[in-house]
Image 1: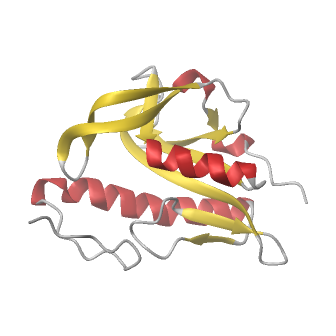
Image 2: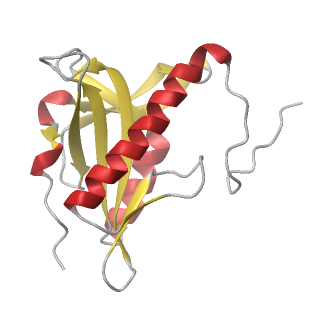
Length: 171
């Protein structure tokens, strides 16, 4: 019998031992990227639950959510692959949010092109007019459960920009 996961509760699942390094990279990345986003924009918070669709949200002065961020940490460089992926579930939710005038930004934390010991942050903002991605269904490497068939969105890396060029949301 498959155990039903309650996505509204904090993460309490056991990760396979050989995947702990990836979880550590993700958790460490979340902390440092949250600090960077708060320095740049202020009022960014981490989503409360491990299974939240997105990692961070930004609120305006009135407390209204104006932007979500999803962080993907990878052990490759920007030019290693022609595209980088994320789950279609995040894309579907992003479509709903932008229809309600909430922005959605995907951030990739990658190895530096010049120094593999350093990291670089790139972003891609999904808009309904963005022809910079493609949908695929197939075997996708999942850090926690090896490979499995999954729907995914692949963003072409030539359209990723350095995080320093991400603009604040206009009031």
